[in-house]
Length: 160
Length: 163
Image 1: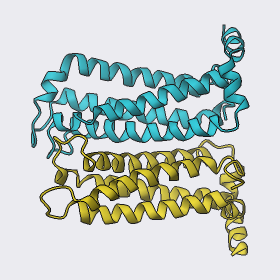
Image 2: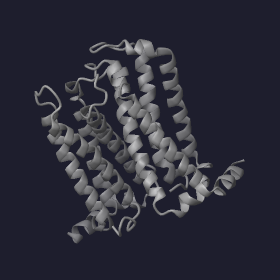
Image 3: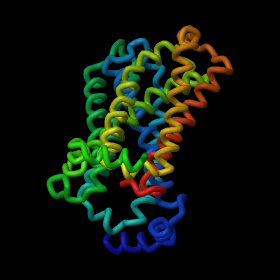
Image 4: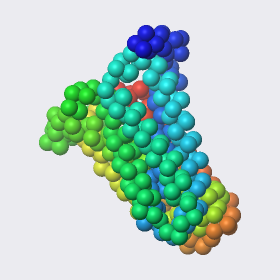
C-alpha cells in the first residue's frame, strides 16, 4: 500500500501539483474542494434545518432537487480530493486525521442516502427517524469539516 | 497608514491571544467554513429561486430560512475579524484580501438594494411563478459575487503571505 501511495506521488500530475507555482495547480484544486464542500454541506444543512422544523413554509417534498446539488458537491470533492491526495499521498495517507475525515465523510454520505428514502417516504409528517438522521447529518458534517481543517495542524488534536 | 493599523492591532491583547493560543486559529477556521456552508446553503437557494429555478417553492418560503444565512454570515464576520486582528500584516497589503472585501461589498450592496426596494414584490412570487428579468440579474450578481468572495478568500495564502 505504501508503494502504491509512493507511486501516486510520483505521477506527473502529482509532481506538477506539488511543485508548480501556477495558480491553476494546488490553489485551484483547494478552491474546488471548498466549493464542493459549500454545495454538499450547504444543501444538506438547508434540508436538515427544514426536517428539524425550521422554515416550515417550505413543503418538504419540494426540497428533493437539493439532493442533486449535494451529489454535485460530493463529486467535485471526491475528484479534487483524489488529486489533492495524489500530491502528498505518502504523508496524507499516513495521517490519522485524514483517515478520520474519510471515515466521517463516508458516514455522512450513508446518512445522506438514507435520508432520501426516509424524508420523502409518503408519511404524513416528519418521522422521528428522519429527525434523528438530520441531527446526525448536521453533526457529522461539522466534525468532518473540523477534521479537514485539523489536517493542516498535524498532532494538535490529542496527537492525531 | 497600514503600518499604523498593523502595529495598533498587534498591540492588543486579543491579537496576542489569537496568535499565542494553539487552538484559536484552527477553531476559528473550522467555524469560518461552517459559516460559509450556512451562507451558501441559504443564499444559494434564494439565488436559485430568483434565477427562476426551484420553482416549486414560493419565494417567501425559501426566505423563511434567511435567519440561518444571517447566522452563517455573522459567524464568518466575527471569525474573519479575529483573523484580521490576530495577523493584520498578512492581509492589509494582500491584493487577494482587498478583492475579497470588494466582492463582499458588491454582494452586500446587491442584497441591500434588493431587500430595501424589491422585498414586497419578491415575497409575492408564488410557487410555480417565473421571476422578472431584474430579479434574475440580482440573483446572478449574488451568485457570482459570493463565489468571488470564496475564491479570493481561498487565494489568500497563495497570492499574499497569509496562512
